[in-house]
Image 1: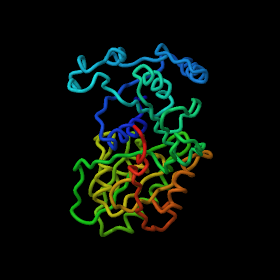
Image 2: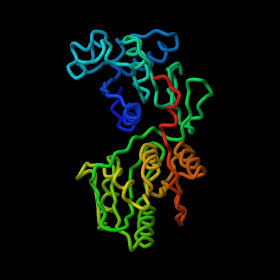
Image 3: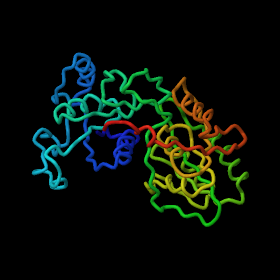
Image 4: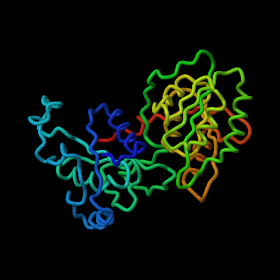
Length: 310
């Protein structure tokens, strides 16, 4: 199930890939904002209806979808789906409705706050303080499945830098970022330096990055590609701004690179600080504090799937 947010969808896709399953992505959204509020109420009393949300046209007749009218899976058994996976508040109610319609299991990739936790499995991140329950599996970071694309091939030892952008809790101070980039360039003067910005990077921060003329440079607004998997597989150390749990989760689940987090200015108390602090304590990364400590412990997400009946 997709709410249109890539960071949510990628967690669901990661699980499908670890399970070795083919999958379809179903985009879903509530017909009206008030309907989302109604979904919390309906879920609390166990009432499920498809009338609250819209699906893509090709998925509207889910109950009638069989191997006969789905050419991609024509050789399979009559019920072509065995699992509904969801992440994000706009997907949880719809996932339950569709799973009941298809009589299949449901998995939530994050703690579904506001809804009943009666999914078959809930993967809940530690920083969300999940309750103890037999169907809730606590994990240190977001599920990630990384595959390099061959976009970046360094000519010598290299360093990667991943720059995000402002969110509701954190913001990039351009002057502070300049100090951090100056330090990296000086500290790693004998290394090739590769940098990428992200969809949320502001124009002024992109201009700052351009001024450095790094050996490899992706300005996302001009070239919307994702070299991060290649950074993780090719670089000795990867620096990442602290604004994205998805990017950080990816970095500690693949490759052998040391991971260093560039802390941003905090607008208010938030989960990001707790998230990265716990990962630092557990040896997955180092939070930049004027010095660099090598930490490259990686999460094996497959261990959380052992014993699950999915």
